[in-house]
Length: 144
Image (tube, rainbow, N blue to C red; front, side, top):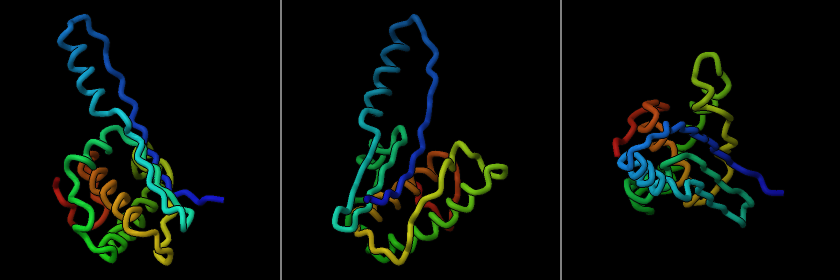
């Protein structure tokens, strides 16, 4: 049975209808950037996967994230442990933190070696999340 590390943030955007073709064209251009906004990466040998659903993350990952192998695996694991710990604290306190941002906890266990790709994706989602939603989970947040 596969275990799943899921970061599911679904942003529902209500776009007001407009009769002008300029507004319709703008909405079409924005939706082109949001196509295929589900990112899935799996480490089949460990039977773990990451599923990220967030409008704009796939585009951000392709355009703004630093390339793979820029960070060491140890760095990514360390930062992910810090970010996920704070995330889980916030997810368990819906009266204090926005429950629409922190919908569920993340099952990230530091004693399990998820591999580079899983850690890279989690780390970059955490950077994207903090910059996009003006949150600060732990320490310095790179501005990309």
